[in-house]
Image (cartoon, rainbow, N blue to C red; front, side, top):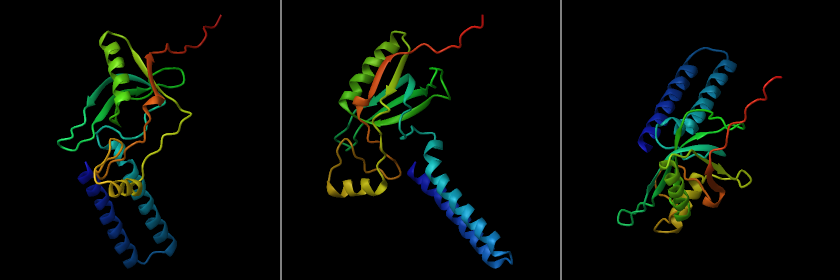
Length: 195
């Protein structure tokens, strides 16, 4: 995954270098050259930021505030291989009227025993035939670790804890399992019938 992201970023950098060469050797108005160079730089940045959503792997972005839980998988930590463990959720975002809005998406959360207990209870209910919804407390902001913060954390400790990772190219969410609650799927809000 990291290799793909870096290859994609390198391809854009090569394209930018080619554009710079053409713009420097061409006899165009300086404003046109400046606009072309700025547009390329902006598109490179936006593509690099959004490539994580397109890579076909579980998203490490924040969960939607309200969602339908389709399925989950818990990967236990493996101390022998120094793997921290993960919780994968396959969810579909719900809009304000409790209708699914979009397509189901896989999300990756760091392993936490409290989260695992909640997921296991929810999975038991799904297996029994119930529809389960999840809700993230929107009052508590969830923040992503920046690359610099992750690097400092890795340097500060020789062994990463469950909240940290040493894998480059992945963001890991600071997620508090207390903010997540599973419950029965709420009924969709339907408009009143005309009389």
